[in-house]
Image 1: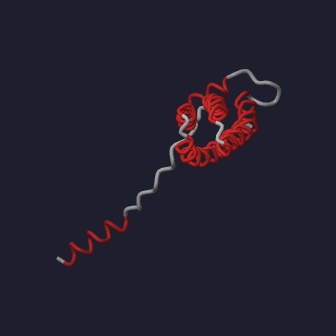
Image 2: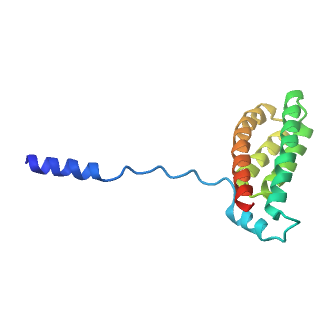
Length: 141
């Protein structure tokens, strides 16, 4: 009996602990591949060009959204959320684009309290999308 207990214990010890799987990508691989396949513009591929535009312009859109929320301008909020939704779609950040659609809907409904709550989630996701996009740019270089 002792032999069986020790054998089970040793067998359990010898098996590697399961490794956590990496979090799923926030960027659609098909969109990234399609951008990489477009003709180059100078030394950079189109993914890098589009990503650079996204990284620079999305900051301004985030600031516009934040200002609109601060002063209660639902129309400006809806407009900026709509524009940002398109930017996110262009780089394959579909989850973030979906949240921008929700933000736009909340703004059109005049529900700024719900929009503020949603914006906190959007900001966190945007930071992760920016990091992944910068990683993809480095892969393309």
